[in-house]
Amino acid sequence: MIKPVQIPISSSLQNSGLLFLINFRKATERDLVALEWNGEYSHYRQLYKEIFESAQKGDAILWLADLKDVGIIGQLFVQLISVRMELADGMSRAYLYAFRIKPNYRRNGIGSYMLSYVERNLIERGYHYICLNVNRDNIEARELYERSGYHIIAAEAGYWHYIDNQGKRQYVHEPAWRMEKELG
Image 1 (cartoon, rainbow, N blue to C red):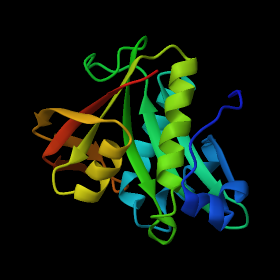
Image 2: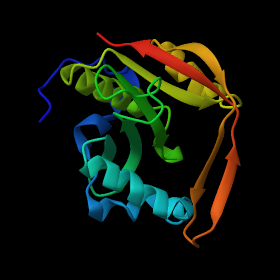
Image 3: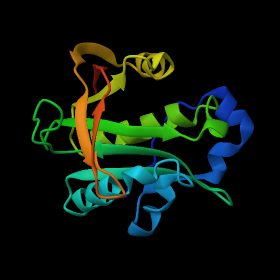
């Protein structure tokens, strides 16, 4: 259980009253279908299942922003341990990915609040660094991370693959910037 902490709240989030209607929580198996966002991300079905299994082993956390009477409006996954130790080593360094807020709820401070919430949880777990990869073309996301204290430390080629919901291997090329933040 996360201890209550003071997390800066943007004036837009505070004024909207949304914060009091959002439950920031860990995903359950029942949430996996909702992570497909009405079919938009159904091609990641198998990947979400694998990430959830990793979370069941304690290697990852799937965080959700669940809006009362609406459902899941945001997600943020954290890898605690990875084969790429420079991303997540299970002790002091964690890797953030699959961070999304549904379009109708963006620019209200929900993403910033969720990011701060997850960072605070990592601090409580004893982590000192968090890193992420942001698509080089996603300037808006990069600016959010920079405002939150992240800085670019390297370029990432951005090659990865997954098995889609039809059982076919899909190859992805998303050149990215690796960003990092010291927690604490």
